Length: 427
Image 1: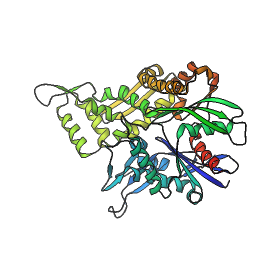
Image 2: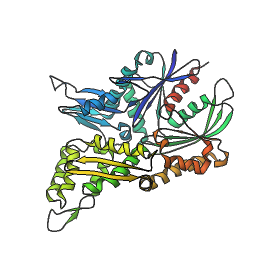
Image 3: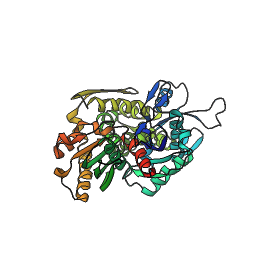
Image 4: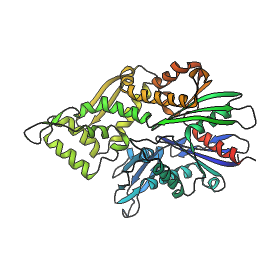
């Protein structure tokens, strides 16, 4: 296929690139790695010091190669993940990787360069429109939208190609739905990824040669799969690592600050905790902790950068609970061994407030569009979090299970972005 448009869905957990041609079809580019090919590049970087001259920029790898390099490391290594979660954060200016400083857009640009090389997309990028997705609302407590989009665009420019269009991810998912549909539909698109949950109510007319998409309302909330991981760590891991216990720096005992556990339970925050200031603070608390072994487990994970191993274990729990009522969480933090059963009922209780906020965001989309659930003909669910049973049940109860459609949950946004560019370029 001769591409006229390229779509890139830079995600919190995975990044996907797709191409669309004049035939109005879209195809995902396979990502090559040392172990094979895949449809997505995990949004992960591993940095290792340059040999033999550590003064040079570190050597980087991405995706599954980055994971393999980090696990097999015999010397210093730094893992960077969930970069998208920082896009709207004014407090994130840069980070140190060994003796070198990286801004956020430089980190993302590094990932994109690996993506282009692993898919062989560089040549096509020079002669095709580049369409990039963004969430309706970026992740974070108070994300700066202008800053986030500016950083996103700068990352692509630094990677070698300016962006032609930045389009909303749920709208792109609607294009993917329309490319496979026939007739006219009123669709609620639910794009449920790693960092954000976005909703779009769209009118789809797929009777002509090119489908027509008319967005009626769009809403979003910075809650999705990463937040579910947070709840597992906070509720199932942190209590074993001293949360709720005390330390006694003076005569009066004090509770160990909860902000330490709040950061620890968030992967993108935990990955930044191995710094001099935080280590000094938690080491001081350890000296006076009443439950030294438990809190030492937390310090051990931070100091030895074992957060990736922790969140791998947590991710397995979440995945297992999509098909099983119970599973086991096993993780070792220094001298602390965590081995406990996690039930789907527990998990759903932990994420109940997050589910309520996701529900409220979808309700706002319907209210803004002025439509009722009975008027919706299809609910198109995409993104990895769409596979969580508790999430699917929200929409099954409200709209009816027969209206839920999906497929290609991890790649539909990238395909839709490419199609958007191709349709705009079509005569």
